[in-house]
Structure formats: structure tokens, C-alpha cells
Length: 443
Image (cartoon, rainbow, N blue to C red; front, side):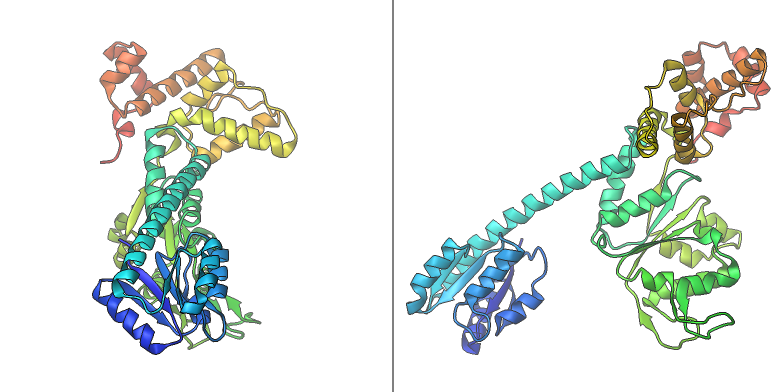
């Protein structure tokens, strides 16, 4: 329930009396002697009501109303007026004031007006939140494409986590879209207007890692000719995305953990602490706790990073998303390259659906662009230079892998779908080097 009230009046006796009345009635009250002070403290989407005198030094209550209306036309403002200001207050209500109370007024009169104004404010903010959620869902649907159950679950998780002030660990195979998900966590949260900084931990030489992460002062080491802001400091207020976090050197893991604990850092060559406020989104392919048990990653840092975890399903686990993704990549490439792209044929779609996509979404995007360029991309996994028998063998293996993936290693379901006898199925599995265990999801 909303209960916040900002009270603006240059008379301390009125401020104190109003605060006493409202506090005893359970309201959260902020007092200001000048309108300028109130405006400086007024947050966006303020969940409450402003009560203001009309005549004050500096900005008047009417000027305060005009500025509040400019910022948020739906924020209720109740004006307090002397007897001679009643006509002025009536005109102000035509300009957007919620109510006016003539001094002296009783506590009951003020409380009644406030409660009505707060109820109106509650309905407005709830309506805004619903519209914002619907807008976010639509934008996210257009960003994280897919109709599969796994993608629907992922989108719900992203929307839930985007607004929470917690670090997130994203697990997924190479090319599965980890940075795109990290970007969504940033863009759909309260830090969206602050920096999003991405750093691939595997791409930085170990001897340069500390300077890249923490920055340095001039002369901190040979070649440090000037001051440099590190990624952690540059992401202040926003989000730092650490891809392939398992590749971070152990020495830097200790220092990153300290930053997360103290929310402060020191540049190389400096003893001055710099406060930082940032959210860490990390991405990894292996399980960080397995890496910790093997001595390659700090367990305490793993727990700090993995407050919440998102798992990105590989493309082979969401084959129903392939046509939509391929069409999107092909259309984008065609628009960028000034080409036209005909619809997929049944044979082409069959080839796409039967491939294992070890490179995941990134590989699919590459195939789409090559086809738009007319590079005669062969069916994935099939070499057109092979004999007919060899191509048939390759296609058979793809069909087996696709069916096993769809049914998560359920042999009975695969036999029914492919209409194969058990002995024939076993022979083909052995010939193609396949086993049921390869397709059973990790528990």
C-alpha cells in the first residue's frame, strides 16, 4: 500500500503539525521548507502524494505544481491555501492540482484527501507497471526468438531477474547466445540507462588482465604512459558481463571477490579506493563448482557469482525454434547485403532440422548468411562430394541423432517414431558411434 507523502511549507509550525498527524496515521512523511528542495529529492515514479503550500519564498506552490506536471502529469499535488488564495487554487485544479485545502484545516480533512489521492496514485502506478511489463515481454519476445518451452521459460526467468539486484551466472555452450541474454538482463532492468560492459576473460593475456579489469595510473608499470579506467570502474552504475569466467586467472579471482564484497577497487599504481556500484553477469560453459573442486576456480567466488543461474538450452534441444531463427537471420542478412532470399524448401528445412548444430545459434546465423550470399551452402553435415552411399549414411546418422535428441535418449519413443526394429536400431547406433547416454540430459 502506498503511504509516502512529501510536505512542502515554509512555516515550521505547519510542517511539524502535519508530520505529527500523518505519522500517527501510518504515513511515511518527508518535510521540506522550500519547493526547490522537494523537486531535488523527487524520484521518478514517486509512489505517493505531494502536499504543498501555495505562497512560499522562491518557487511558489503553483510553480511547483507546474514542474511536477511536466515531470509526471499523474502525480497528485494537494495545495494548502490561505483564504485569499482560494480563487487561485480553483484555477490550479483546472491546471492539474488534485485538491486544495483552505487553512486552517482539520486532520480528518487532510487525511481524507490524502487517502483518495494515494488510491488514485496506486491505480496509476499499477496500470503503468502492467503496460511496462507487456512492453518488456513484447520486446523480449522479439529479441530472444523461439517458440520452444525452453525459450519460453528462459524469457520468463530473464524478466524476473532483470529487476532484481543480484549477480547472475549464465551457463550455455559456445554460440548459444549468452551475451545476448546478459544484454537483456541489463536492458530490461533499472540499470538500462547505465553502461553495459562486456569482457571475454579468455581473450586477455594473463599479464594484462589486472590492468584491463582494474585500470591503472600513469607509470604503474612499464608502458603505462597514462591513466586508464578499467572495465570494473567503467561499468559503475551498470552491468559488467564477464564471458568465459572460468578462464579468469586465480590471482584476479581473489581481487574480483574483494571488489564484490567491499564494492570498492584500486587502480594499479594507486592506493586510493574507488567506490563502484555494478551488477556482475558472468557466463560459463563448464560447471564452476566442478572447476572449483578441480582447483581451477575459487569456490567462494563461484557462490558470489551464482546467486541466480540461467541455463541456455543448445539449439539441438530446441529444434522447433530453427525455422524462426533461420528466417530471422536470413532476412537480416538479406536486408544488410541488399539481397533477396526465397523461402526455404522442404528439403532445406529437413537438412536444417536434422543437423546437430555444435556451433548452436552462431552456426545457424552463419549458414543463413552464406545461403543469402548464394554460396551454395551444402546440407549441414553432408559432403556433396561423397558417394551416394556415403551421403545416405551421413543423413541416416543425422536422423538418428535428431530423434534421440528430441526424445532425450528414450529408445522406445525413437523406435516408434522411426519405425525401426530394436536389433536394426542397435546395429545402426553401433555403426554410427552413437549411444543412448549421449542424449540423456544432465540431471
